[in-house]
Amino acid sequence: MSAQPNPLSVAPTENQDHRTVLVGLSRDEMITAFADLGEKAFRAKQVWQWIYHHGVTDFAQMSNIGKGLREKLAAHFVIGRPGIVQDLRSSDGTAKWLMRFPDGQEAETVHIPEDDRGTLCISSQVGCTLNCRFCHTGTQMLVRNLEAAEILGQLMHARDALEDWRRPGEERLISNIVMMGMGEPLYNFENVKKALKIMTDNEGISISKRRITLSTAGVVPLMERCGAEIGVNLAVSLHAVRDDIRDEIVPLNRKYPIAQVLQACRDYPGVHNARRITFEYVMLKDINDSDADARELVRLLKDIPAKVNLIPFNAWPGAPYDCSSPERITRFSDIVFQSGISAPVRKPRGEDILAACGQLKSASLRLRKHGTPVQKTPSAEPGSLAL
Image (cartoon, rainbow, N blue to C red; front, side):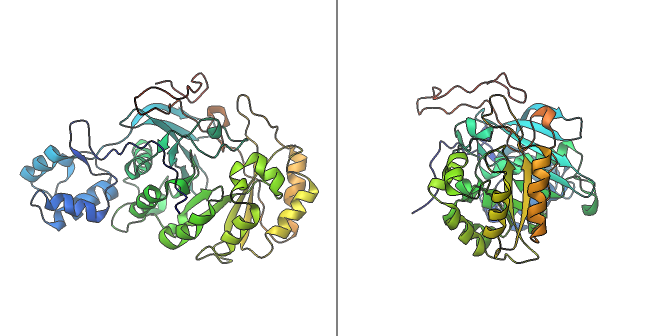
């Protein structure tokens, strides 16, 4: 039985003028689309490289393709990017884009520059179905899954905005990808898989699988498939060491409790000491931050190649929790470190533009089949734009 929910989905495979959108097609799908026009496979491979290696958005820029063919391609296909309705920059250099897709729905994407890397945080859904109580995104109901083109479009726009296409690989401003934005990636498995396969394609964007991390709240039936079929790094949003606490703050735990999640981590394909699983742990005052909690975390992870990211809770309007004190977070970190498990404290980034972990949200609305809103989401918050 599939763990995949069935949200409203709108596939952006056709532009408004009925041209086929090339971004998001697999290599084989693109070859087939070209064959339908009577063009050979090598032409599709040329276009693939122009789109994903050079980042072009106009067929006229494809200099090794004749003018007549470029015009023919432009008549049948479009490359495209998501629309951008907000471009926010934090005082610490973090960038957040609110992207609008062909059906008017929106999602947020964040770029976090650091000294040794540049990380792009990509959304997989509009809204989220998990309702984690500490997460701002969880206060917005699930609208729909993002298609592969829309997941890829976030990366491609970010490279456009940062002028990152022409830089040599070792100087990329976007060197790492984290599927940690809006939504639960494993509840959109096929689209996420397709997008990540294109991102890692050696003849295109060519990002190493070891530089991509997928974060899940613990969708146990799909964790093994993620390792076997996608092969990227895994991060697990753990956030508690007892089922009663995790039931409250991560409701998915009622379906897949801690013991099942940790066993899926032990079984994750490719996990070893050089490729550890990251456990994310948000620090909530008087909820999950005691010395006893730290010691239990050590016990739970003792036989798993693991590292822990301690995340100071990032507040948002109406949040039901407070962040643990700096002293309490340091004490918790020290206990875990002393056991031999790495437990750095993640430095909050982009808080002034609501771009920090757990703060992403859009004003998109879930629609009924006849087109009327199911729920109205607040739009007066920073980082949101009403439709």
